Every structure is written in C-alpha cells, then in structure tokens.
Image (cartoon, rainbow, N blue to C red; front, side):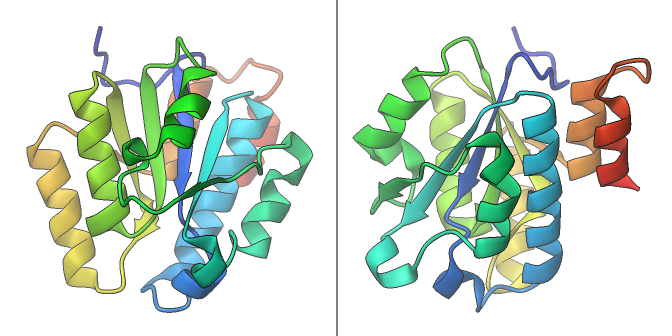
Length: 187
C-alpha cells in the first residue's frame, strides 16, 4: 500500500556511491554531505537501516571519511561494492536488501542524481518499492543534470522529499524519546 508518507518501521536508506574521488567533482558536495550525514544520524537514532554502496572502489575510493564517521555509532558502514550503475544490477545489493524484508520504502541519497540514483530509483519502483529521493542529499557534477534528473524521477512516480521531511515523517510526534536527538540534527 502506497502512502506517500514515510514511516521509520517501513523505511530503508540507500546511500549510493558518496566516495572520496567521485565527490570531488560534484556540485554542492559540502551541503549534500552535511545533509546525508544528518540523515544517517537520524536513521541511526530511529533504528532505520542503511545500505551503503560504492561504485568501483578500487578506482573511486571509499565512502567519504565524514560519512563513515557519521555511521560509526550505528555500525552501518558495510559497503556493497558495485560496477552496475543501478544498485539493483548487483547480486550483493539484492542479498543485502533481502535481509531487510518488510521495508517497502527506500530513501535514496548520494551521487550521481542522473546516473546511479536515477537508475536505482526506477529499478526500485519497477520492483514495487515506494521510492523517496532526498533532494538535498543527492547531487551531480552539473546542476542541469541534477535538476533534470529530479524532474524526470518526479514525473515517473518517484517522491521527491528533503532531509527534514524524512526526519519529521519518521518522527511524526514530539513526545517520543528520540525527538530531541533528531530535532538537534535539524536546527
């Protein structure tokens, strides 16, 4: 059942290819890394699992040190190496995804918006997932590719959100014990 509203017990974050050598050429990389870091921390506090992918790490390096640090308290950094653009093109990703059954909502973050993020989004949608793209937590080398990718995904049934929307939808209430910790990530 599609709700268009995220629920933390139904969600899974997929952090796509935010790697040291690749991120150097991305527009808005500092802002995007900040938003991904905040989202990762919120996911950890609210016990939303994360799958991390790395595109050809031998050539492009590993996930940035800042994001590895953000994931450290929650033991989320166990990257799936890939060579396919779509995460769904890798058997190891599908195996990891299978360990999180009962989580039909995928929140995609990372790079590049118009390649790996877009192809993963379309494959996930075609496999029956509700797909959410955190627009402030994805980027491309060019602003044009970024904007066209978001528009194309939106026109094809992918829900575009922001980090704050994700966090507040996961929370839904202010009287939860986790509220203060997550709220500190937002303000």
